[in-house]
Amino acid sequence: MTDKKKSTIKEVAALAEVSIGVVSRVLNPGSGSVSERTRQRILEAMQTLNYTPQSAARELKTSLNNTIGLVVADIANDFFSEISDLIVRRAREMAMNVILVTTQEDPLLERESLSMLMQKRVKAIIATPTSANSDMWQSISEMGIAIVFIDRYLSEVTHASVIGFNNEASACEATRYLAQQGHRRIGWISGPLNTSTSLQRLKGYKQGLKEYGIDWEKQYAVVKNFRDPLASQALDELLSLEEPPTAVIIGNTSIAPMIMSRIRQLKLSVPEDLSLIVYHDSHWSRLLSPSISVIKHPLEALADKALLSLSVEKQTTCELNSTLIKRESVARVK
Image (tube, rainbow, N blue to C red; front, side):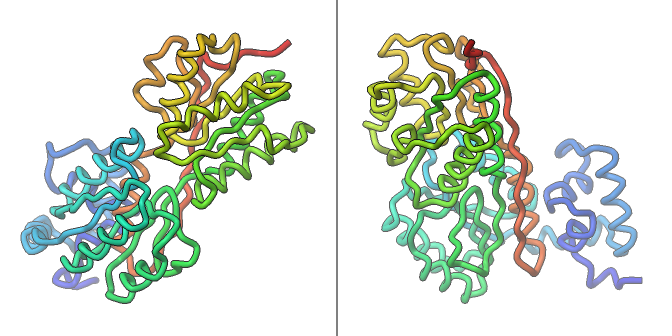
């Protein structure tokens, strides 16, 4: 039997395949909900490791100064604000502090932020990286600071865990759904192709077209910078084509509100004039009339997996399944 002095809350979480925050909720009734099945799995892990609530109390007390850095691309983006909130709350349940910084998609600002976190000797960094600074991420890894990339990653940085979504499959599914509704001219609007997320989604879009015998035409795919105030012009570019699309997939959350605003300015009717699917299930996408069809990401699972990966020694790679939510913004073409 394992000596209880050597067992830790991290080991309990790893054995039960949950985050440390979930273990903490079991140890502290009333601090949050846990399914009975998960609770029993955690209790069995504690029994296997001979881990007691007294051990947990001592461990949490000694870990109050644990600090992680959370580096997100754009806190004004609904996706990043929601995932930041989830990670901060989960980290607090683990008695960990969080230093939250935003890069605003600026590699220089990212570099300055990473330098600050290195100086503070944070235990780990959870980040949505820009497409640059691979050398600095490598230096961070060599310092012994754990790195967890969420949503997007840098292929050059090999000593990092990656928790993301099935971007290629979800984009393919969205494209197939539009094709099934009779659409043959399907537009695509996304952020820059220097991020893994944008590249994966564009690849899925092309695959979806291919599966329905629709030739990919470059003119139907428009790329804009995430924070470009003129990103809404992507819609004008598509509508100005000799044969404009009858449906559009917006493959980036930060661009979506600008496109929706442009649709209103042009007095276009959704889905009569233009069918629409948007990435990420923002609050506004449900409240609009008609409600907007979306690719919904499992954000809570992303937060849990990101923090759980900090409790294991080896790098973790996990691709979570996003879901196409069909609402009222897609019309059938006869």
